[in-house]
Length: 114
Length: 114
Image 1 (tube, one colour):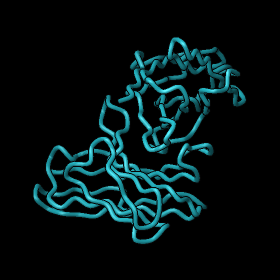
Image 2 (image 1 turned 135 degrees about the vertical axis):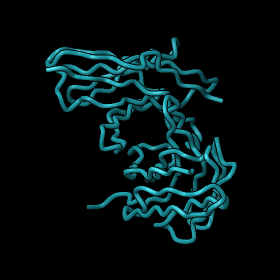
Image 3 (image 1 turned 90 degrees about the vertical axis):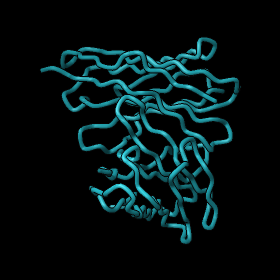
Image 4 (image 1 turned 180 degrees about the horizontal axis):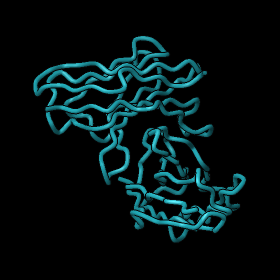
């Protein structure tokens, strides 16, 4: 079974600064998919960014980018120019190649301070 | 707005009572999922469905049943509620099994079993 670990339960960053959230995972599969989801206080789960394991290029979505290290099984999220609206829980998630299991990490609570 | 709608949003049950949570999506997604979210544990998959009339067990299926009689609806049932089922329940749907377009989540149902 796959496991996803987020070792930072809470983090804070000053507005306009850059912050990196860590995620590691364990799998024996070669092809898989990785995601970062944002959960603001509204509870809505919002897809932030997605990475396919067979792609070497790191995914980027505006201020959000990832550092995908396949050999190290690491998938960190970098948020540049942090905004107050980025305050939320962030979940790293792993999807197996069959696509029938999306496994989440325990989450990191990010606070952006003015 | 198109998306995933969950009803009810909140519910309090007494131990032993039964209830059904309804999930409806209007995006013509083939795949639907039920997750539960507990503090510090991220989301865990209860059951999922790869199409109308089909369901399968996820990571934590015990105590729950599901049905997918119509493509747009995915029902989660608790036959005899227990305090351990106090949680926030999320429904999600996706166009593809591998989540190329990501999962679309509902806004959650907070269930308390007393």
